[in-house]
Length: 509
Image 1 (cartoon, rainbow, N blue to C red):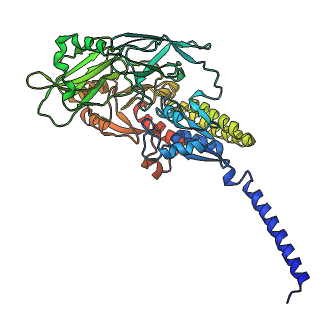
Image 2 (cartoon, one colour):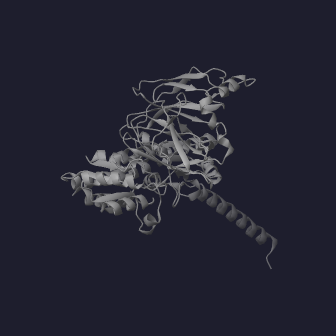
Image 3 (tube, one colour):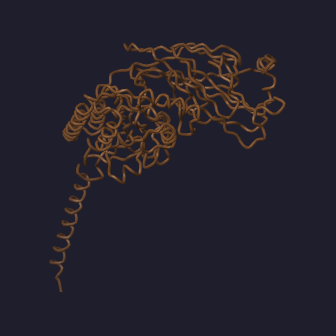
């Protein structure tokens, strides 16, 4: 049996051991190499995730937001996504032109310490200035002319403006056709709305944008509106347009180029009527004009260089309006390099890598050496990829390739290729026989052997055109979607880009 003195000695030793073990455990938990002390980084979609992982290594916990099978353009962050960003140290994305949803995400997130890496800016982002909107009054009446001016501070010499509107903060921004300068003129409608001005640089990246401002429509006793409704009786047969079922417009792309064929389809619930007409106008200040020879659900219209609005109207057998769609804005933008896919240019991808590196260093200065070493190693791989493209493509005689959707403009410009897009087509709408015939002429003119579609997207349009024109189809990776094929074949950015190089040789050699 232990005597009291020996028992006290054992208890003291046990206590000291427990304290020492606790200190060691605490030190281990606080170690920079421990999982819990890693900075938390969320990357928007696949290329941003890959770039960030290569730079961060084991130093940071990097999560991918837009996961398997989801489209990075039209993704909608979930409540879990917002919660994760609220707890993150860094958020990495490319640009608002690619990830349309980041603005609404930033408006929702409450994380004052979050470091945001907009990798499209590159490593040397300078002060872009700010946009101020002048000329707004406290309220307008329906029919009033709204006249606003956007003023850009700073030294930038850009003049490529777009104006956007939305009903309220819960809605998505929509481009307003016919508004391409710093001045905004618009006829006030019935409902209040928000507006903002955005100025783009020469690569069609957002340079700066204004804060949203609300334009308040207040008709007081509605007398102004009543007068407005009494005008234009020649259009009286449109007054009951809302009595029928609503029409939605499918097939609208975010923008078109001059000469593209805009293909839209009016979708409505079952009806006994098939008397369709399509109307266009330059903007809300103009009268609607009927488009000749457009008397079906399908609308095909070759653009002339000006943005416009379009709507579909369904008539009954007595030529009274059964129902009509809301106007949609068809935005024509011929600006060079307008696509946001800058990561498909191995040289511009290097700038994105360096921008991400700088954000990680800002969040975790102690990891500076690791981030710099990893970034340098990955940039070296990107330079080697660039060299492969240059050597392979430099002597090609035929330098044109045809794609279903325009996504490879930066890559084409880098290596002196010509990207020919089957413009105006959406994966929502199959091309008509007349459209296929037009594309067939394009195929013959350029002696096209292959029509490429983007891996992870629908191939139906490319396949339809290929069947009708006697060409083949091929796959190019734009890396917007983390597809089953990428996962199954363990293809990363470098492997996918080398696949693209090999695939392009079927067209240019």
